[in-house]
Amino acid sequence: MKKIQTSNYPIYFIEDTYQPLIDLVEKKNYSKIFILVDTHTNEYCLMYFLQKFPFEVEVIEIETGEEYKNIETCLGVWGAMSELGADRKSLLINLGGGVVTDLGGFVASTYMRGIDFINIPTSLLAMVDASVGGKTGVDLGMLKNQIGVINTPEQICIDIQYLQTLPSEELRSGLAEMFKHGLIYDENYWNQMTRLSDFSLEDLQGLIYDSVQIKNQIVTQDPTEKGLRKILNFGHTLGHAIESFCLQNEHRRRLLHGEAIIIGIILASFLSVKKTSFPQKKCDFIKENLLQYFEQQSFTKNEISEIISLMKFDKKNSHGAINFVLLEDIANPKLDCHVDNDLIYQAFEYYVV
Image (tube, rainbow, N blue to C red; front, side):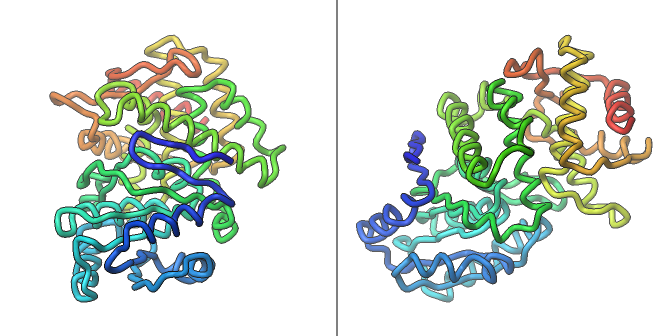
């Protein structure tokens, strides 16, 4: 597979992944190389990577999980780097899923006002989502990605062998963003994703590549999210609120990002029927197809009220208004839609039926 060239950095795939990384490190002559891992990637991915990376490194480990994607964890990483002698000519390699790549990118972007970093995503979600766009950051309490900067890595290295280390639920979580890319941008890709059960791991490799291509095409046209890039937030206004709600309520099972976003996509599809004349038949098909892969959740009216209140913290809001991305048709999204709370309650009723 050919590399994908973004506006600022290349993304390498499979057999082409590691030699360009080695070439870059030799060319830059970094003073020190640090690898950020979590407890999972330290156990299952680090040794595989080090066999392909012939340089001396310092390994920094953080705990696994969204609940550790915060400033406290950053303080620990900054402190470890400082104690180990990191300077402005050091390199940070982020080997992990979305938490490691988001947090690691933020740590590198702010340490000594910025050092180079490279992302090696090990989860499907990180490969198709966090790999493109330069968004870095951490959560503020239970509020998703409230603190961060947009800054790009030196390169991205995607090797699907890491997917073999993932639990099945983590693999499914990454599918959410791939489904989304089809719905907002490419109907042919959406149609391919609806036949996912017929595909092998080799087919998935091609779908990952195409998903990265879609996101790159969107981000290249709007790198700072002034217009078109906002369509990537389809399903996320409610999805992020649901994810935050489940994180902060001990009686709820913590939902993975993709699990919450799938709910948000189904809800947004229903809202599209009501607000932008999206065909009901297509909405029903989206719901039916996505629920083949993701367990249906239930929410009480009080819980829905709490979820709605969390939407006020969404970063896409402006002037006190909550902005939704909806669909007029598949691959034809509409930005900055306003939705009454009554319709949101109806959307939840549609989701659980």
